Amino acid sequence: MWVYEKKLLYPVKVDTCNPKLAKYLMEQYGGADGELAAALRYMNQRYTVPDKVIGVLNDIATEEFSHLEMIATMIYKLTKDATPEQLVEAGLGAHFVNHGHDLFYENAGNVPFTATYIQAKGDPIADLYEDIAAEEKARATYQWIIDVSDDTSLNDALRFLRERENVHSLRFRESVEILKEERDRKKFF
Amino acid sequence: MNPAFQEERELMLQLQEADFVVVELTLYTDTHPNDQDALNQWREAIKRASAIRRQYESRYGPLSLHSIPTEQAIEAGWRWNQPPWPWQR
Image 1: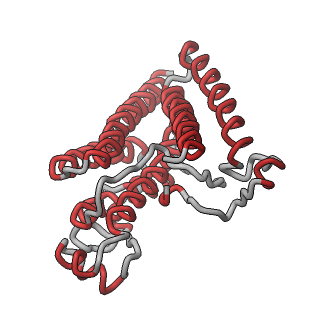
Image 2: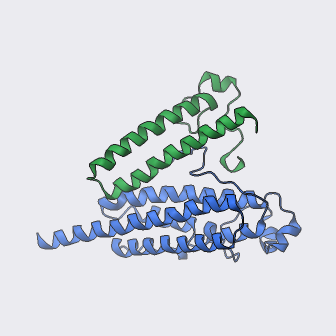
């Protein structure tokens, strides 16, 4: 089970209302390499992997949900004071007519989230390679968003998230090595 | 900024930092279960985060329902269903 903590993993501040930046951030909210996809992918894989790597999947999945909350907070803060005209100007007109000021699990191009973004292959090493790729793709997305953002407060939190992708990628790489070692040991004895 | 508000912000930030150390060391020890030094750091990090959490919650009320609300917090008006929620801060 989970218990809610009334705090963010890392503080999220924004300088100004900026719906265009919010639109870009939706890629990390409901996009293929976003935080929701990451959280759901790892949470689902943890049931059937060997015991030695359950912890890493469980704990990274849990952290991804806290990243999802940070991204949601960013989008909320960047759009809450925007007028419908400002949303239209930022390319969020289609979002506004469907969802008003609500958030929605969709990517930066307004494509709704789909479970087809993630896989569960029944092969722990194949799954962990997907997880490593997912972290690297999310890291790249954070970099591209930072490159087009001039909100210095927001960029601080985005750099934190970018760095977490690196750490998660590393932990998944170590998990692959742990499984390979276990596999090779079984072969010889 | 109102000084009481600022104090709360500072203590929250300290807790976020301390909790993050626990998150990071938990992931590290997941893949390095025999690293005794890391395991010791992890235990210390949990101890430190727990002490800061007690300090924060006794003053400003529970952050989760695993902590007992102090009479001081209830009297000061703390309720679970009370803003600010994290995205409103």
